[in-house]
Length: 180
Image 1 (cartoon, rainbow, N blue to C red):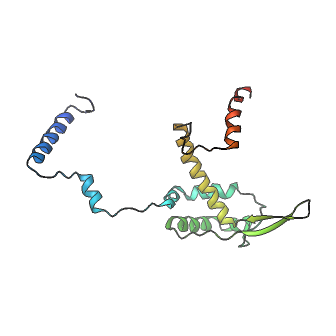
Image 2 (cartoon, one colour):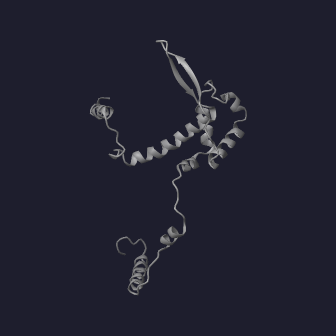
C-alpha cells in the first residue's frame, strides 16, 4: 500500500480515477467533482450565530433553572422562581421550543437603583427569569465549546490575545504561578 492508502485496493482505485481525470483533461473536457456540483447547486449560506442553540436541551434548561437562586428578585415580568417551578415541565418545554425555532426573545431588564454611601445611586438591571435560564444554558454550551478549543491550543493566537496594562500584569503574574 502506498502513502495515504488505508485499504489494499484504494490506491489502485485512486490511480484509475487520476488516469481518467488526465484523459478527460487531455480531451479538453472539464472535470467536475461531486463537492463542486453541490457547491454550485446550493445557494450561499448566511452565517447563523443562533446555531449554538441546537445544543440546548430540556435537561440543560432544567439544570440551569435549578442553579438559579430561589429567592432572587423577579424581573420585568414579575415571575418568581417558585411561580415558574409550579409548571416547570411545561414551562421548560415551551421555552425549549421557542429557543429552537428562533421565536425566543429576551425581555427588557427591570431597572433598580441601589443607594451608594456617597448619596448617589448605582443602577442595577434585573433580568427576567426565563432570560436567566437561557443565559445560564447558553453559557454552559459556550464554556463546553471553548474549553475544548482552549485545551487543544492553550496559548491564544495573537489575534485573540489581549493587550494593554492588564495583559502586562497577567504576563508578569505567570512568572509567580509556581509559588502557589
